[in-house]
Length: 552
Image (cartoon, rainbow, N blue to C red; front, side):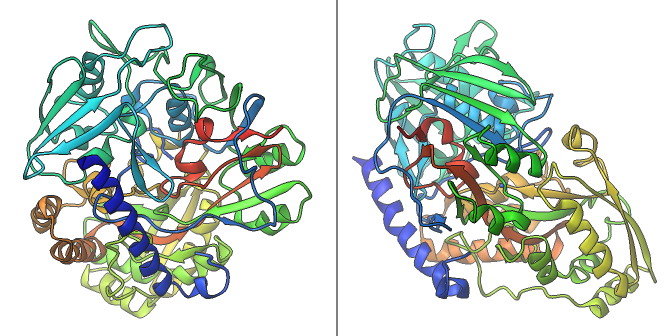
């Protein structure tokens, strides 16, 4: 069966990717130490690893481990930094981590990313391409029911995927959906998808929370009620505040959805999240402030864990407006940024230095040979002069909605750019509305990307001209040409060369000042347990609701 081959190949290459990463990262010699989603943003889309894998083991900082076997029952409470008052359940409009967690709890996807970046069946039991990967055929699982008792049909899957297609679509996964030329049923339980161009990674894209399956409706899908085929039924939903889910008694699988009920609470303030965990008001929290990692680790009954993945922090410069229309100004900012100081002061050493492109060390095709851009105020002055400037004044918008420590990061940048003749005023932006009022609205702003399991999708979603989340308005014809070739290339060595060129093009010209790849750090009480953590997204690949359990 081809789907079995696909997963097995991924397993082997994931191992290769892990060894490659370990050989590059000296921190593995000591402790193996090595994201979002948001309004009008993109983030938590998943991308797979057909011919390459995402690496990096989960690391527990304390000698406390999760229960070895799942337990059924109990109430699990999750405190998350994510969630906006503008959130909804429409799968096209899932932009942040809270939405992703809830979506995965309520609905299923055709495929699913498991720990180790392997691809597994979900609503699709198998899949296979034609000879050039322009046609994919999926076999659907039979006998699956929606929460209201309706049986899953191929029409539901077609309608759910079509929901993201079309010129007027504002879907987070429109760049992926635009690859589809035609989608049609092949009998009652088979689906055929024809692509405009070859894509060897396509089944991995369908694991995104945005591609969760809803019921077909006269006008498309029922995308707002929360009805799905997932392990939980929605009981309460207050956007930006809380969501309450109860276990679906008719769930088609018995190895998931362990807790009897789950509550997801948006707690945007990092200190408030910590206190909620310490006071036993929640069982697990995400996005731990790096300043308090050691303090939390020392608390009795608290387990601090981290994973390494494609999450990255950055300053986004809008290259379609002054002063960043000049690539020399963009380069001046990149050279004037002290990345090592940002890693030390903002991440407290819990991360890897960035090099102005999104394909970090966790990716199999990461180009370790690309020269690391280092702090060089004199070179920054050189590029300012090339842009016709002796000095530069900027307002940098920063807010905790982007990531914990975003304001601190802007303050570090403010100091590091001074020797280059760049004067920065840090503008503290409120968390609520950040992704509608600041993101892609201000000339330069603090930002983050959750990244993808697959390098090709990261580049396609964030850097292709015309893509909704090409947030720095990067434009490069050569980039478009090479990415298209890479998406169709089955030879891994040839693809590596193409991916290296793509990374260099972004590094040299894009308006993304990517300074660091932080470790994903969460903390939990001993009342909850889990298996091996997925690395592709924080909170167990955003599958925490379905995969975790309440102990005892």
